[in-house]
Image 1 (cartoon, rainbow, N blue to C red):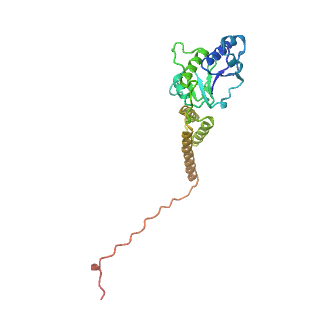
Image 2 (image 1 turned 120 degrees about the vertical axis):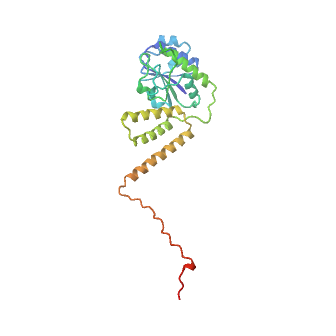
Length: 269
């Protein structure tokens, strides 16, 4: 199930327009986080047209609870470089191709940033994917409802109303959290030059696990491997903690001298 999550929307008309676009592509789960406008006002309703039920059933929260979702998709118009891991984006069609592999039972949130400031880095870091819509560098920021229309169009085109989910589906949040917990345990046992380098590794692996869309079988294999790594490091640590322990090597057995031939033996008289 895909949810459209709007962060602190300021314009009621934009909320109504987003609801209308959602109706166009058969999405009906709208979440408003700390809205600064009345989503049931005349302005919102007039823009929503025939999608009044989406406005009326919208979930309104004061805080963004990320743990409620199996996968989160952040949106941005500001691109980063290869060194900025959190701002390494997908295009809408690339995102759609990944989402079509997820079971409809999984809870997916597409996070739409603020109309004026977009999403903050700390919010993006909590998401599994980052998506951006290619547009001109001279004016790259789209209207909120226009951006949502493009994203939902690509997803609808890839997923479709009659999508039949495969029995092999990507893991959800519990499995992802467990894998990341094991990675963090390994990272905690490593020496890094600075705290920032360790933080970069944590961000990198979170992004990799999110984008990998692991199946349950694959996730079990990864967890099994990580468990062996953790156990191996623990064993080495225990061995280092026993000072003075000598390693005794087995000495090679002494060879018996070869017997002299009979002709060389002295005869006793």
